[in-house]
Length: 174
Image 1 (cartoon, rainbow, N blue to C red):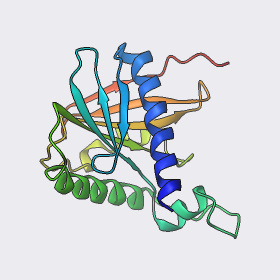
Image 2: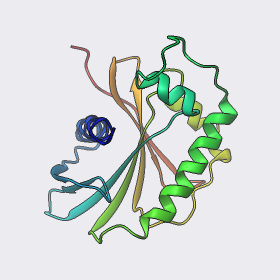
Image 3: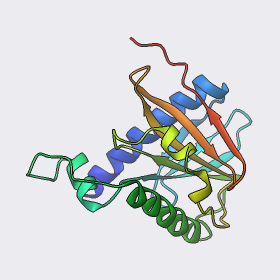
C-alpha cells in the first residue's frame, strides 16, 4: 500500500513541476522523496522547499474506484457538497500536520484532483465555500487535468479565501 501511495505522490509532483515550469517559468528540482513532508525540492536559488502531496476525492468510494480497488467497475455517485467538504477537511488536516514537518526554507501543499468530473472552474465557482485555515504552508496549489490540452497541467494557487491566483494551461498536445 505504501508503495502505491509513494508512486501516486511521485507522479503528482512530476506533473506539477512540469506545469509550474510551463506556467511560471519556475524550476523546482526533486532532491528526495521522504515521509513528512513527501518531497524535498530545491529552487533556482538553492533554497530547500518541503512539498506535501495529497489527492482530493469526493469520498472513499471514488478513491477506491479511481485507484483500481473497486470491483464493481462503475464510478460512484458523487456530489459537489461532498467534494467541497472533502477539500475543506483535507485543508484542515494538512494545516494541522504542517506545523510538525521538518523545517525548510519554504513549505508547499500540492493537491492533485484525480476525478475526471472536477475541473478548475468548479473550484473557482465555489471559492467562497473554501476555508483556508492558518498553516505553515507558504503556497497551496491544486493540479487538475486539462481536457483542452489532454495533460495534467491546469493549476490553481490558493493564497487565501479572497485571493486566488489562477494559471491556465499552455501545454501543447503531442
